[in-house]
Image (cartoon, rainbow, N blue to C red; front, side):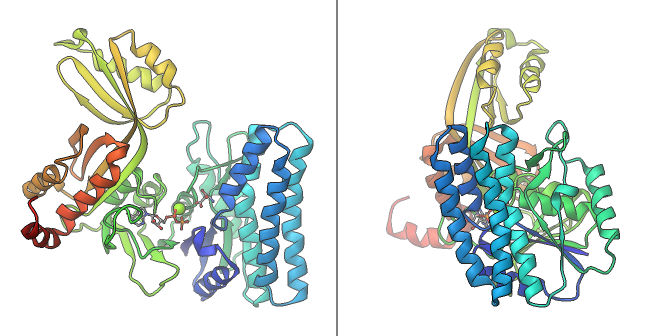
Length: 449
Ligand code: ADP
Ligand code: ASP
Ligand code: MG
């Protein structure tokens, strides 16, 4: 069995939904994981914010979103009968959304609201399959996808439940399920965080021991830099799991930060493909050893750097342990760390408990904070073997103020921390020096570097 996940743009219009159904319509057994249609989750986030604020315009926003779905229904289905059924499907979802205006709003309600996008896209797509005479079945993610008390996927439960569901329908070849949504340890509706449908797909792939997990999106694979900031980026044909995991974790939006790990643990290849250009080869992420050297660059924003400076650190042991324990007690992961004789600098991306963390750290020394920082992550197998590339990185960043550098922590990653204001410049300069050397030398002949 394979898993095929389609993102928001891939199911973003009636035409796109028809192309997806076309792509999945063969005899190969598969689970198709769908995101919400593009724009929907953002609209649902806005609706919950309005509900939280007690703002009456939430209902007007819901009506507006429903109008968009009415157009989708009218264009997606070919017959009156299916248009009526489609209208019934969306009405049910939007009536539920409107019902939140009649009672106090809670965090569970917020998750229920955010879940409606994936519930809508999967229901509409399954109905379209039925109208087109394609046998398919909905596999409700809320029956098998669950996170535990720490917010981590409950792998054992997921595996048991999904396999039970599949075994109860041995004749079905095409299952359609929701990405992103899950239940929490109390059985309430929750989710795997924004962009989480990729994570759903790889958790499902691992749970059913799939042959392959395909992530279909709006670009022809993993590019060597962020195409939203850099022109002339190129698709990479092959990446190792470790390279892809680092890039996803450090901000490459094409994959959810945690999506590579389940596939890596189960050694299932991840294939990234373009829905708009299905013939393009895309990117294969697997355990196969691939070329050495720098493959790609990614950037992670909203980073906070914390410096703890203390004479007590000098020649002392146990100091770092105490510092790390503060972060552990507030369940706040640390991304980068550098030390000197009397100071330690580290970065975090969750500032939920920042005030309390600072208060406790002040017991150990002077604490300084830099906000709005960006980690630029340069990734490639055995990156450290390439002395020439390291020299190019520093040349490229000549005019970028570097706050921290992490080098040597792993064989495939060099991370650099800078003010977010310099992100675009750093990404572009690195691309120019690392991937477009020829272009650069030509340019250099005409201007002094
Ligand atoms: P989906 O809705 O299919 O999940 P996303 O918008 O989440 O799609 O991810 C695809 C987008 O990720 C691309 O359109 C591209 O702008 C962005 N992106 C950022 N970094 C990269 C990268 N290194 N390679 C490819 N795409 C990237
Ligand atoms: N619909 C969700 C989001 O927009 C999940 C996803 O698309 O992966 O974040
Ligand atoms: Mg995505």
